[in-house]
Length: 149
Image (tube, rainbow, N blue to C red):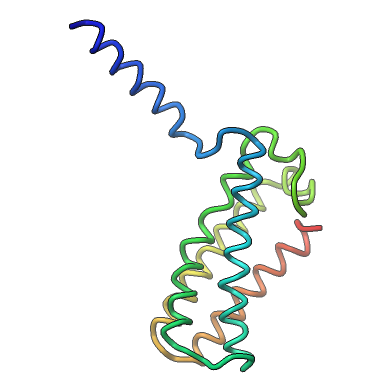
C-alpha cells in the first residue's frame, strides 16, 4: 500500500517540476518561439493584405486572425528565458538577453495591442481595425528594429 502512494507522490512532484517549463531544452525553446512568431506573421499578413486591398476584406476572417493574434502574442516570450536559448537559432539579437526586462515588456505590450486589435476586428468597424492594426504593427516593427537581425 505504501509503494503506490510513494509512486503517486513522486510522480506528482516530478510532474510539477516539468510543468514549470514547456520546453525540454534550449533548442526546443528556440523551435517553439520561431513557430509562434511564424504564426504571428501569417495572421498579421492576412489582415494587412485585407486592409491594403490586396485581397477582399472579410470581416469574419479578420476577426478570426485577430483572435489568433490575441493568443499567439502571449506565447513566445517565456521561450527566451530558457537557459541556453541565447546560444543560437534564428534572427534574435544578443541584445534581447542584455535587456530581457525591456524585451518582455514589449512582448506584453504587443499582446495588449493584439487584444485591442481583436476587439476592433470583432466590432466589424474596418476603420477601427485599421487604427488598431497600425498600433500593433508599429510595436512589432519597433521591437524588430532593436531585437531582430
